[in-house]
Image (tube, rainbow, N blue to C red; front, side):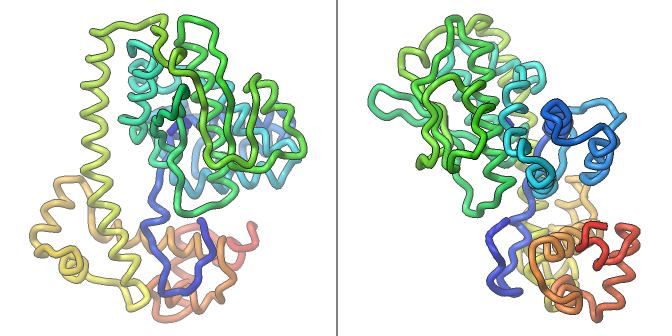
Length: 356
């Protein structure tokens, strides 16, 4: 919330839906600010990395603007490659977060009656901020765990995002609780890094590296303590607001995800028509066209998005020949694919793969 991919076994098992996550651009700004602070990068590199994920570094921060999860993972992995201290960037991001950074979501967290209520709002409304690193609340004996829901696929960027999530959750917990907040422990699935000083400095409690979950562990007594700014009226107001946002996200993204998924499944057989995809979804062409129009979506734009995203991930994450990638993304030959890719990115697939 606060904040693949497994190796592809066969070209025919690629699932486009695995690429369809999102995260607020707030975290891009926070990541690159932290990287400069840690001296992982200089200001020129910061500007270049903004452009890498398609953002204007001079534009104002917009919590409602999103980028794809894969682009954010790529950014974190690039920072890790560029500096030994890059692995600490997510912890520094988490330490820098404040409720106000999250807009209505942060205000709902802050105005909840107690920490358990705040965590329940994270569990309920996390997708307003991101579709990845969402949380669930679990109780075991005298402890309450605020834990990241594990994903089926793993990569370093996702691991780093999960650590960002628990680091941010800890920061917000300290911000809102009426008493000094001291977790029982922080549990992280990753192995202890060579330099864990940022972890120790921020968490200030026992850290269980190599754990079975990414989670904050607190006592039930701490979970029940009132928040400093608890306000029932404000809490209900922001819950209603977030319910509307969540409904919009769920309605649009679910249809978009399903259509993109079916397009991705069919691309190796050629670009599917709207009628083909409607049939795969068990609806008529007219119904699918109407639903896409209601959500402000155009079928040809989704086809383009599917081909672009799939080609980018195949170039980044596999060693398939360009002719194979052309086939998998619905092109009749490599030269046609190369021309289309150059229109999309202003460079050839080969130069994109080399990072040029």
